[in-house]
Image 1: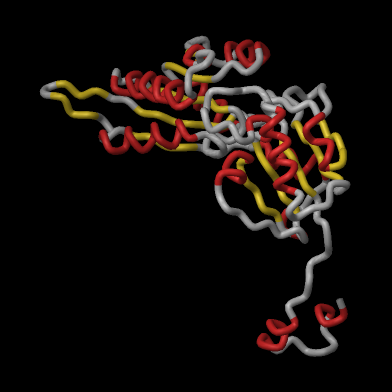
Image 2 (image 1 turned 90 degrees about the horizontal axis):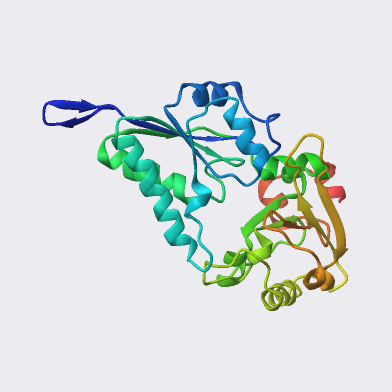
Length: 273
C-alpha cells in the first residue's frame, strides 16, 4: 500500500521471490513476470552465470554480495542488505528481491525485511520457489513422507538438544559451517566437522553410509551424491552448498499399543510387519 507522507504519496512494494536452484529451468512464469516489471532487482551473485541470466530479464540489478566482508559477522552483512532493500521501497520503487532457491528457506533477511516493511505500512510479500530439498528428493530418489524425514541446520543441530529418529532420513543443511558460532566463517573447520561426526555417532555407527549432496546449478551439470562412511566426514570436501543426508539405520517399528487403541484388525497389513 502507499505510504502517506504529508501531501506526498510514495508508492513502494517488495516481492521476495525464488529463482530455483538450477539456473533458468526452475524459474516460474510468475517470477519471471515480476522480475520484468521491477524497478530494481536485488540478488546475490553466487555465480557469474546468474548475473548474466538476470541481465537478460532486467538490467536494473543490485548485487547484495557487496555487503559480505571478510571477518565481518554475517549478521551485520544481513542488516546492510535489509537496509538497502527497505530504502529502495521507501523511495517508491517496485522492488524484487530475487533469492537462490526458495526465498524463505535458510534465509532470514527476506523474512525480516518483509516484517519490517509491513510494520511501516508497505506492501511486502513472498513468492515460493524451488528449494534445494525439492532437488534433493528428485536427484536421490527419496520420498520424505515414505520413511519420514528430519531436517536441521547443521549448527543448530549442534547448539541445541536434538533427538534423531534413525528409522527415517536425517538431512543437515549448511554442513560446511557446522559449529561456527562466530557467524564469520564460510569455509569448513575440520575441528567442528570432527565434533559433528562424533556427535552423530551417538545414534549411528562410524561405518554408517552417509551422502554428501549438492544440487546442480546449471542444467548441463550433474548433481553431487558422494557416499562415504560417517567416520570419514572430516576428510571430505565440504562446500558452502553441501548437504549431509543420512539414510535410515533401521526399519520403522510398529507401535502395537497404538494399533490396539485404533482397533486395527489382526489381518491388516500393519499387523504383519
